[in-house]
Length: 356
Length: 114
Image 1 (cartoon, each protein chain N blue to C red):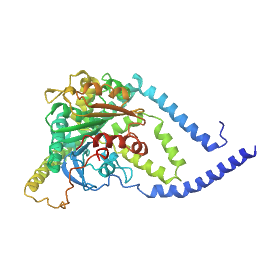
Image 2 (cartoon, each protein chain N blue to C red):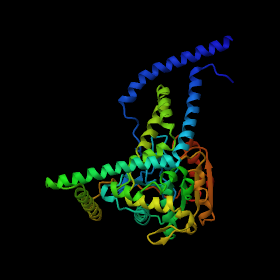
Image 3 (cartoon, chains in turn purple, cyan):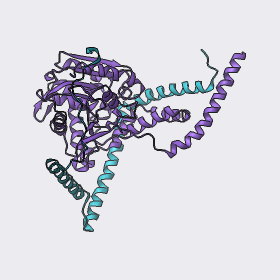
Image 4 (cartoon, rainbow over the protein chains, first blue to last red):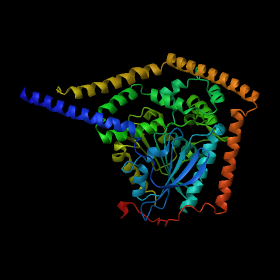
């Protein structure tokens, strides 16, 4: 009885202390803009419309022979791989001795509405890989791609078997779009007129995509805001919240024609899974990918459920191939405390053995 | 185990509420009714957008000013010229502002290989 009373008093004292801190630090929250993201030193090698190619400054005097190209999803910014020092996959890879490049995207301009799947797979990716080879002086390249960046990389790899691809790693990459239940429901062709949307807006607005991602978990934003208030006293929590909140709100518009094609061919037609997908008039066969291949899925991914990526490992023609499913969600798989403990060491170990 | 800490109880309840809201909201968002309502609202937005665009285009034409489409076209042409200039500059060596850094050797081996 006395212990319970002491516990209650302790808890009350702790909450009082936190309430004081909350009030003091709450003011800071609204007066500051949060940590600088994506600040690892780099050179911009290509800046062409929506396309950006970065080369990060190596941090070791001796690097693995094969350069590593990160390919970001077209819906979001690449700084998810480079949040802040100590929480940056890029920095982690540099410290592990890799020569790191990133293919990132800026918002497509209004005049880029006609960019298509072909532009990304047959132009941007080959241009990036060629520049990485030129910069590194090597003939082969490892590609590590996230989400829809993974889809683009798979299509490129399948259509360019002689491109010098050394290894391919994809994170949370869907191939069975029928399993992306929520997106499939929202893009239901009975109700969704993709032609009209693209013809009206040109590019698919980023707000549409942000709202769609947000609606996948309707309670998350409200609960997140309450948790933020509850944890305002905790600097680490606030820093982490601001990083991820800023990144998720930084959703990019999609080039109109590209959005139209992906909706029709992938969401409606599921053509990649059925082997019917053509890019630039050429049929995509993932069996053409024979380089060492690793796919990493997240157990609690609400954007790309594991069922949506499960057939991938069987479709790829490689003999050296592996799939791992790690605890975490779509974003926490690649960034944040869980990623540092789970994904990053696994990735470095897998790549190290195949990058000499 | 029963907690005597009301704040801990509140946090637990918040987690439960979030799970429930995600489940109930998610089920609703997956329904035909939701999709129909969502795209109905989108269609209304697009109707408004089209009407405003047409009206603005007529007003700009009447004022002898370029339309949005013409500005976009110009912006695209400028961007292409900038890209071509960048390529020419690169070929002429004019982009030498990147400081030369010593290139690392490329002989690293994974730790297991010693």
